[in-house]
Length: 402
Image 1 (cartoon, rainbow, N blue to C red):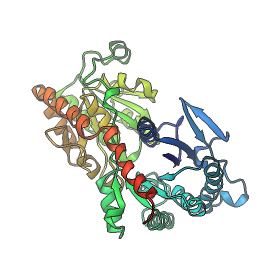
Image 2: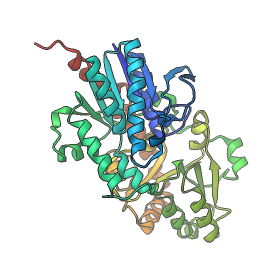
Image 3: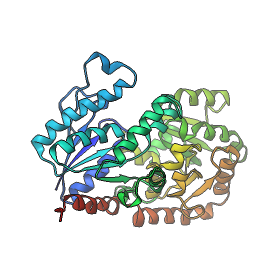
Image 4: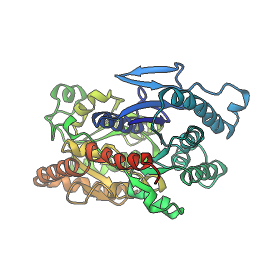
């Protein structure tokens, strides 16, 4: 079975989107399926094809005509350039299925080519991109761009041959739009637990270099977006330091809110307590995880975080890390309070501090929480079981019509 995946972007760019893609592709290959991979012009690549870490990607050149730079029409340019490139690749490779991943621009291009070449189209929704754009300041909720993006999504959903999504929150939202539930399959985020050691020993050299050896370390590893709530975490730190003066906070990653976070740290006089580690190569991420006693995920309450499950907490669970997270819907799908982690009221710095204080004050809870988190990932959130769900979808689409 040959599956042509149509993607917004891919490696060598780093994002949760990219990591999920590579996990899916790797597992599909291990299952004996042949995969091909095409990115839209949003990848920003100049090459027609590119090899990255053993993976071959077809790239899409951007639309060069003048109108492609105009507001809103730029989105149309992404669709037209992608459809043109997709048709070239599909005619040469003859895939059995076109598997388009968010955003809807990819699905619409896939529909155009799929109908022309009689190839079924699967559309995978990883998030509602209009919500992410609104949170990042690229438009406003309910504005023209927001409504157009939502309309394009619904247009695609009603026409594709099958729909997958990453969590129940997104599935429920689609059903509320009128999409029949039987057409939607949840393929949840997962991890390859075999890649991670349960509670690995700390990297002492790295700990000494960062100045955290022998201290209780709080941490966040990921992208610095507003919706992650990292400012809330920094605001909670002074109160925590009154009870545990030796605490250190590691922030590993980067993103749009980095400058604001550094300014907040300076404003609160926390320069010696908050360490900005910058972005770390994916191969070294486990070393940073090994230094952190408690991973904090303070996502703020909004549509994006209520509906979408993140990948990073699962990576932390796989390594037996302690987790404190806000009680947004995306977290509640993965974290059971008191069993695999602790939840606090989203947006409440005092509630965050209370849960962290509880863990610090009760180290006897740590081994059980770590073991239960690891066991949850191994049994319910592994990529083998998750990706296997695609099989029934593909087979149904390729079955002869009676």
